[in-house]
Length: 100
Image 1 (cartoon, rainbow, N blue to C red):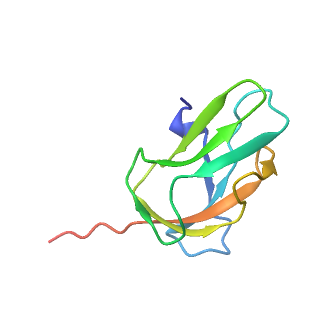
Image 2: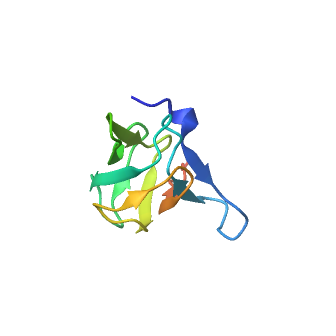
């Protein structure tokens, strides 16, 4: 399992403050990484720790887990796509917490 801090969730200023681009994390010396499956579809909600998609290299399979609660806005790389470290694969939105 990957350390959640190694995931690339970034906001480059073109997105609102709660929306992040989901980039392929650095999972070692892998040159090519395949998206085996998405566990959610666009619009689906997820919780901190939920598996968003499954990535596979020549050597191993890795779950890409959510570091916060939110929902999938857009899937940018479909199942079976070959991607590289830093490539955008989706857009996610952090869920707002409501306090009474």
